[in-house]
Length: 94
Image 1 (cartoon, rainbow, N blue to C red):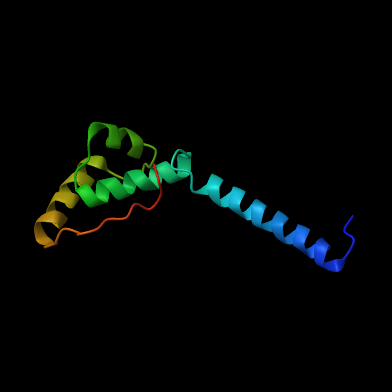
Image 2 (image 1 turned 90 degrees about the vertical axis):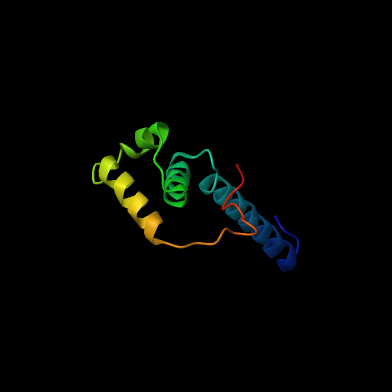
């Protein structure tokens, strides 16, 4: 039990910060199933190519036709003029 109001709120504050940090760490863990799917989509869209392992990861989405997506990505990449990034920052640490 806290001796003063300040001690009580200090304890509550640090408890909240600890819980928030834990939840964010779990939610944005690169090894988590959900975020790894988003990283897969990011890699496919940025590269414009679908490898065999990428296709296996995208199989869980029946609305995606992998053959058509590969053609569409190639067409999109051919019509889009891009400059390479000078600095690329990863979304999360792997």
